[in-house]
Image 1 (tube, rainbow over the protein chains, first blue to last red):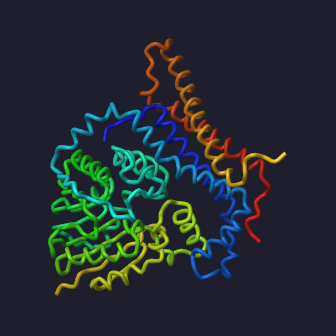
Image 2 (tube, one colour):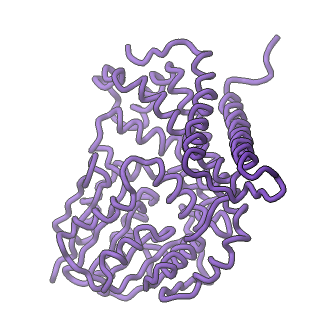
Length: 348
Length: 88
């Protein structure tokens, strides 16, 4: 995408990113060598009860209270700032975006689509209005939030993480791939680049995210079939795909939907086909303090209603219950991130 | 005299301050750009500051100033607080 933000939008985004960076340094400089390890000795069983103990303790720190306030501001405002920055350049980029609606990729939107209850109107990760919260929400999230704010501030390289996740397939070369949860097309593009000969289909619930994923694919000359459909009812034929995969989707799914998506993946995979699901770290992979932080900043104060469910989810058990065999669920790459489920549909 | 704002309003007050700070930064940065551009061109009439993409020394100056500015806003919170008690 070829665009340049106007001064106000660019400066606002820079400010937001620096506010988080300086804020985090203030907090972590104060807790790095003073983490309340003494609390970890006798903690309640559940994350919610443990959270109360940690929160009560941490709130005695002014740095913590400041961090929490600024983080909530960032969560509340980042979507609005990104939308405002886009609105300033919409007239400049509108023709370009319309031009990318034509190209080798296809987009099938479902006129009768009715979003599931668990997804409708949820401000995921503080998105302003949810994944369809702006007529160009795909651009707003994909370019300004993900590519600018997240890639510019998160540790590691989120695109490289998506690429290296596919190492878990150990050289397997799928001919037909189904991605569940295209979003704005960031992992979709990695799949298309890693398997240029494969036939790639990508589903999502969000019309606005799909529209942008479609534009990004066309801009790069990639041939991808995008379709608006839930991952638990794709409408695709039985036994079609060699690989079903998703990245950063399952933490947005309630338990029943996660189970249903595993079952759907099993149905559309060919015998011997692979399922690869990459997402955030399992709570079990963290010490109790880090697990509390993950829970607190995302489940409790992060507009991620199913974060805890996923953090505690038995992904390998779900896969086994759906009929898969040989499931592994482990952290890949630096700092054991992302966490990846790899499993296969039995060959017979 | 009892204050009008309650403890539960503090986060919202913080949000408002940060929004003000953000807007103030946008103006401050704009002035830096303006000063630089005026110095280079000798006039204002052909300027379009919205499209200026700072580079080189100017970009570094803006980055340094922004970080200093952000720290000055957040430090104000720290200075008014008691020392941290993070471990027992």
